[in-house]
Length: 91
Image (cartoon, rainbow, N blue to C red; front, side, top):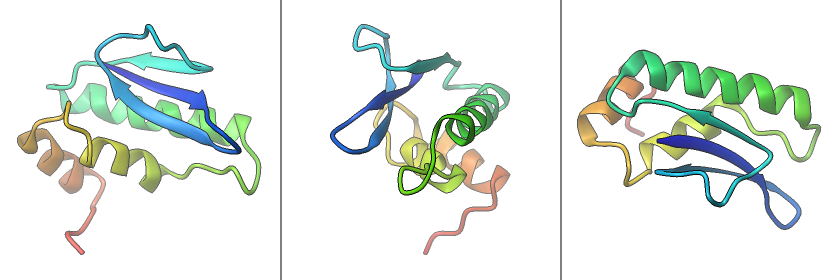
C-alpha cells in the first residue's frame, strides 16, 4: 500500500492507495499488515507535513491516524493495533 499526500482545492489530501498512479507530492510505501511499517508511515507523513505546511493547512498526527482508521484498505485487526499504539479512544 501507499500513503499519498497530494494537493486538493485549498487543502492537502492524504489517501491510502494500492498503487501510486495518482501520484501526489509525497508518498510512502508500507506493508498494511505490519504495525511497525504502519507507524513508520504515519510518523514519516507527520514529519513531512510539518516541514511542508503552514497554518491553516496543517495536517496533524491525529488526522493521519484517522486516514488509516477510516480506510477500507486497512483491516479491523490493524485498526485496533493502531488505536492501541497511538492511544486513540473510541469516542
